[in-house]
Length: 227
Image: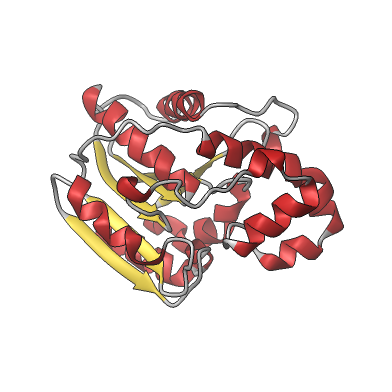
């Protein structure tokens, strides 16, 4: 089964490369590269969540044979927010979406309450702020190439999130929720997804921080068990 994977703010589709290798033939991991990120860096960044969700929907549709082909969605952090909005679109259009896997994402009633006044911060202040809330791995802050190339990308995505007004709907598709027990950004707020689910909801907690998808063996085992 195809598993379309949506990345976190500022990240590239390559964040799922290790998971793709770990899954092998157990599932077809298909990372989605947002415009302005990674291999699409030459393209302009998208400036609104609504437009980014729409772009992802069209990109995924191109990679499905037809509406009857079964598939799953997997998102991490911002990617989970995109998956949540995509679920309603795909179900309303009759697509065969089997599972939605949301990793490191708080429930809609808590969304975006952590984002500060980032538009007035300079690059140094912004990166320190994002690191302080656990939104970027600390080791990347020591990488000058990362800071030079990716700061604008991360800032764009965080501004996109800050301005986002979610369309809150009940989820018809079975949910799979994954969180790290050391994730200070999401904390216990991931458990409230049950309020938005009309179907089966499964919970998995790993011994990780916010970047829970880096635990590829655990993620592989969970995906194999739910697909």
